[in-house]
Image (tube, rainbow, N blue to C red):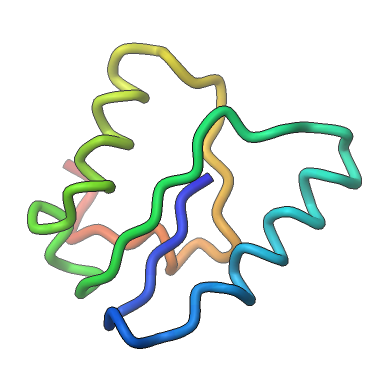
Length: 78
């Protein structure tokens, strides 16, 4: 699970609740939950996003779940 807000002080709870509900409906449990804050187009400055990329690259996870696509947030496809 990946949760991102634009600023530290924003509430991540609603995103987490949406994702937890989606997982529960499918009887799935997260392997790990990563939380970050920062601008969408500055993914290189978000340590948990970089950790997420490493997990995906190493094939340590089968899927990444986010509450909304724009919460994933990155500058470009590369």
